[in-house]
Length: 375
Image (cartoon, rainbow, N blue to C red; front, side, top):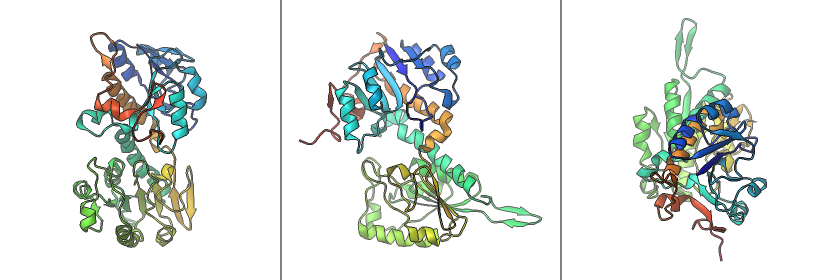
């Protein structure tokens, strides 16, 4: 059983799919591990650390691997290096990328999309969306604080009082909750909003104030899987009016709203941005999916009047060492379920709901029901 961890080919991706800690555990499961030279460099992991954990260091490590662990899906120019039938676990970003999925299927790879992991109790330790969003929410507040030209906590000094910054979090998933907790720890006055009623209690438990139009539609605005539903135009208008009035008074706004498989909902229009005080900061964590904020520019800090709109890409990658450690553990926990512990070899149960949930391609075909080509 050979497991390979290649270097990410995307220059904007500093994370790596394995750490010395996970390599030791894979070795204990009977695997031989090969890590591409320099794979962990941008996450602060030296090749010598991988070797000390039991890995071999090489160049084209994927060519004879049974399992390949990656952060992002293989690029088209990588596919010829993979043998048919190899299991590849990565963040595959399948929505809207049908051509890339077809190329992966045609190359004979078994592609596991880690971000499609079912949200059930057994899979919590494999949930890459949560592990990475947690860090993104934290980093969003740090990035906002960096761009904001004032202190976040209230400071009472002999020279006068510095008021606490007002921070508003829009979207209270994993990223939003961590943003609330981080902003509170830094001393800000925090409010938050979400269309899912269950989040109100979570927001208040972190010491923040909840803001929403709490009508009948709001009470039913959550899927069975815990995701946000897209709201009616009428509700969106009412919520937008409430939000617009609130945003005027805020110093920092962080938006995190995403709907799986859909463009990010627009939460803040240019008029709302213009209503904010000069020096205010907006961080758009959904910029890679089209953005929640009108005027956000992917990869840039855009200026709209006196307001900064932060649109950094791959925010978890801005904490590469921490995000790699968590992501590698997610992968380890999932791959562990595919290994026969007595025989110390791969034994994939294709009927396991976890495997069914994440398998995109197999036997030269796209097999996931959400992405199968329409007849």
